[in-house]
Image (cartoon, rainbow over the protein chains, first blue to last red):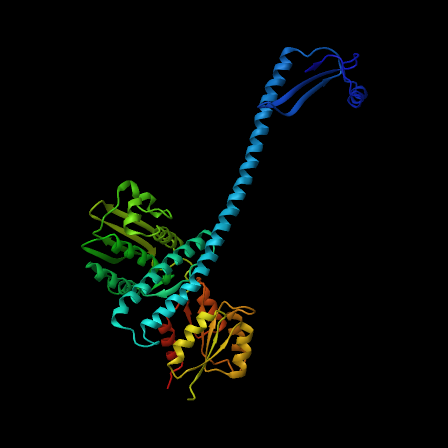
Length: 326
Length: 124
């Protein structure tokens, strides 16, 4: 819009605006709207004290400048919206983690009662249990413990995500830890007719780290290996090299396709949807294992061949950084 | 029967019932308190031979109750088993720092608890 002379009769009727022009001595006006998809974001206005039309060059330049301004304003708005969305997502994610942490705690309380009473019934403190009832009662116990492990995994993951997971480092002996895993999983191996062998080198120095969490990682890996192996063997071996302890869990199971290996450590993802149907599981074990190993400053790796078996390895420093003991 | 006395401080009725049933066939005598404050007063009044202390309690946490009991001459040496509820890394350490003699993470096996009690306070 151009107004060659604002003083000319009928050229500019708004008295308040006219008053400003007159006080400053402005006569001519050029206004270019800042248009974004039919919406006016603002107006660029140029005044001049001499009356007359503005030249084409000036008009073109101002129009180009208006175009750039619209883009800049739009970008700034988008950026602000994006920031706001990011904040909302962060809040939502924190709420989810807190919900999961509270929920899994609430789920454990009744489970504690179920497992406790069932164990006492099995232990015959309420009287003799007929032989025929021992098997179903044991099934209840095993399923309850399974449910507990699932709930614990969800709890752990939510704590890791909420940044509330801390390691509790202690001095521990690697062979004790491996023996604990062997003793816990041996019954499962025997039940499936699988060989389960562990090998630990002699004279390993004492380790320092969160022994409970490392045990949990090995239980996850060895538990998976037993789960996905129909026949053959599962081996857990230990090696110490350059201050790192490497635990290697090798199986002769179903194996994993090359293109599935990368997503294995993502929560809720298993190698294949059909695997979930056949073998069950939540796909949380490996992602939690990876996080615990990384919290120790270590790393996980996997080698696998479809139909031949898999080897999962975790390498963690023999002594966790920040070691306060001499 | 003048058995040794165990105080169980726990707000959840079913958890108390588990321990009640568990100890029924032993010579231990069980008394109960439902929150941290009642736990401290009951312990000072009845001077139990062993205390099972849940860490998550109404009114006063089990950690705080343990600290207070450790500061009282009559309960300073009483074995206290802390029952940690979150299985939260660090709970064990907090329990030990508060003065607990041992800890057991929930959900615990009743027979594991009984074994721990017998270890700290032999029946005979």
